[in-house]
Length: 121
View (cartoon, rainbow, N blue to C red):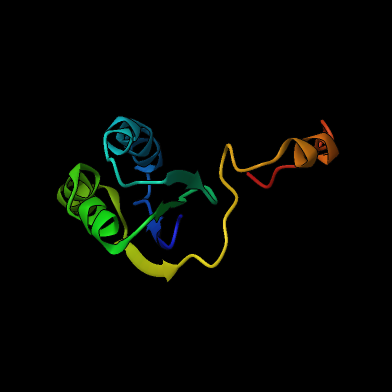
């Protein structure tokens, strides 16, 4: 069960947005190697604003992620990439829905989203 999470808010330095985007995309293989990471998302919120969300089954897995390759690379690259230090929020997960947790009854009642929904990015 997923019980703990992290939300990390990132603000790219002007002109470094593309580098931040690539850094986050390139971090995915490192996270895939983490046994305790239940889910991980790298997101672009706005032109220079990014976020990371990660979920874990326990504090041991969350701590391992915070001491892992992504965190080490982010710390070493932070002065070059980010306008201010990343903001790290720890959270408790109250409920989740993960791939494979949907029953066949649930899957048959899900409506696909409209094809032409607007995006804010």
